[in-house]
Length: 427
Ligand code: EPZ
Image 1 (cartoon, protein in one colour):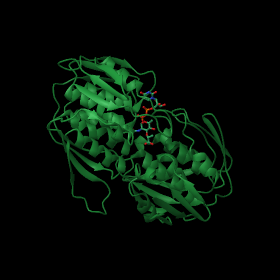
Image 2: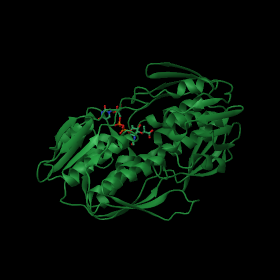
Image 3: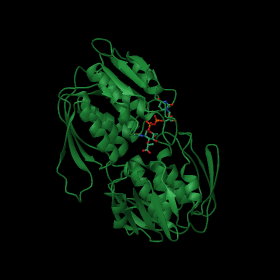
Image 4: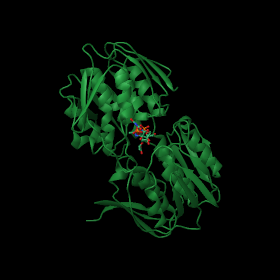
């Protein structure tokens, strides 16, 4: 099984390219189901989850063609075409490996009038229910049945009549499924307390490019006037704000000076503000965001929150960085119930972290020491990489298939800015 070996201590300097956003790509791909015309996505990141999603769409009758990209290029172009939907079932063996598969529910229901998707089940960071997805589809007029581990959504003959859903909790995925169901409805759909993440804005922009009518883009109230059909479009995936934030932490923790090329500051205000509060220099340039550490990091008090708050997907990375701060930081994880799996692994490297429920106290230490550690989930894995970059000695990160789901060619990117990092196979 692949693993990553890091010998810590190098300052990272230079220019590091940021790829297309995983969490945008995974909601833009199923939009191809909403039309029989070709949809071309540019700047698609080369990630395991993107490949898995392509295979799922193939099973539903969507053709996917990847335009030739040179091996050294980051990202690629994919043209998808759902001339005819040949299946409306997303099977358990696919959904259990990639819970984002649930995002075919809305578009299949909209295009084919029905959808049957395996319940995704929980994952390492929480039980991840989909009740809000189903609440939205029911509010728009769908009938929902749950049997034998599958959810089946059925639209009345002639399509969804439309309606209003008020989300009791902000949910990115439920907002995405609701939007993709609403764009082909027979009436108007209103989403109240909708998620405002940049990935939702990216989805709205693609849907509008395909002919959808959506008001309130970027706000927590979205109004969608359904259309009889959508047409094809070509669209570039937004840059990955979490990848950029992760590498910003890499520059900060190593006392480095790195340009994050292609990163979009508007998507990252809470993360950039937190970096500045920690004493990191942040300079927004024309084509990049420069991150330069100057001296010891200052401790922080941070709570995760829906956008525009501090993103839960950056909590583990900041925890690793704050292990090197001058003093005690307090992190509170408000979104997921079990997102501290990285703590025991960081502790094996000498971190001083105590967790009480949703709150973690991170006491800065003079140094971390390299060790063999185990990746448990995507962002926890990145926190171990970050710790390895600054630790004395060698760190071996096992089970790095977690990383390959969300970080395109991670070791190559870190090598370009001077990290002593390599991938090998421990067989
Ligand atoms: C998306 O997950 C992201 N994944 C996650 O990124 C991200 O952490 C999360 O949004 C929050 O920003 C993708 O976009 C593929 P939610 P999602 O629905 O949509 C509860 C990463 O590391 N909830 O916003 O599943 C849920 O349990 C991944 O890139 C319900 O109760 O997240 C959680 O507590 C991890 N019922 C909260 O809402 C529902 O029906 C927010 O979840 C849905 C969600």
